[in-house]
Image (cartoon, rainbow, N blue to C red; front, side, top):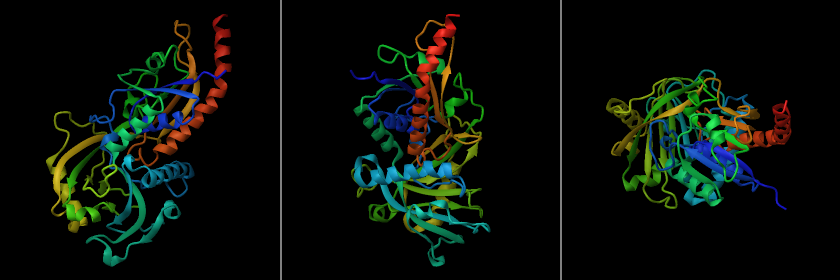
Length: 386
C-alpha cells in the first residue's frame, strides 16, 4: 500500500514559489497547491518576478560559501535549460562587467572558475569612460516567459494553482488540500512577508527599480543577443552608485528571432512607488543615455517599446530560507494545528540567479523537519488532553 502524499500549500507564484514547487514535485512524495495574488502573465508593481532582466551574475562575497553554493546550483540548472530546453527562455551569451574606475581592492569574483572564457577585457575594447572590465560566458533568462514555463511544468506534474489573497500563515494552513489540510506551508510571498500575519517581517523593504524595454534593428540582433553588461559608475567591486545594465530576452524556441532587450536601471531603497505613475520619463531618458554611451553601435537607434517599474523584495540580513515544526494555534477545531512552516523570501535583485539553490535548500530543510512532525503531533495531542 502506497504512503499518502505529503500535502504542501505554497504562498506565492513568483520565481521562488514556482521553483520551490517544481523541486518538490520532482519527488512523487509531495502533493502541491499554490495560492497567489498574482500569476504568471500578470503585471503588478508588487509582483516582482515578471519585471526582472534577468541574467546570471553572482554577487556572493569571496568568502560567502553558502551563497556561492546557492548561485552555483542555479547556474548549472540554467545552463542545462539553455542547452536542452528551448522553451524555457534561457540562452547563452557573454557577460561584461565594466567599472568606470577600477576598484583599488579588486579581486577576481569567485565564479571565475565556474563560468567559461573568463578574462579581462583589453583596454582598447572598453567603452569610453570605462577603466576596467571583465568578460565571461553566462546565461540570460526571459523572465516573463520563464515564469510561464515554470507554471506549465508544475501543472504538468500535478500541482494546482489558485488565485487568491492570504492574510496570514494560519489562513494558509487552513486552506483545504484535497480532503484534508496541509502538512507543510511555505511562504514565498516576497515583499508580502512584511505584512503577512504570523511573519510580519519588518526587515523586508522595497527597492524600486525602473527599466526600459527596447528593440534593436533586425540586423543588429545577432550581436545584441550575445551581449549583456553591468556598468558601475563608482570604483566598487559591489557596484555601489549608478548601475547601468543591458539584458536581452530570447523568444522561447526562436533564438534567431529579434527579441526584447531590458535596459536599466535604478535602485531606490524604501520607495514604494506610485500606482498612478510608476515610471519617470526623466529616468527613462537617463537610462537610454547611459546605455547608448556604453554601447552606441547597438543602441543608438534602438526603439523604445515601454518603460516599467517594480519593487525588489529586499531584506536586511539577507534572504530567509528556513523550515521548522510549529504549532500555529491550540484547540480551534481544525485539523493538524502542528505542521511544518517554511520560508523562502527576501531575494532582493537576485531571485533568479539563486532560485534553484534556494528551492533545493528549503526543500532539504522541509524534509529534515518532516522527520520530527509525527512526534510533534503526537505530543500535541497528548498535551491537549491534559
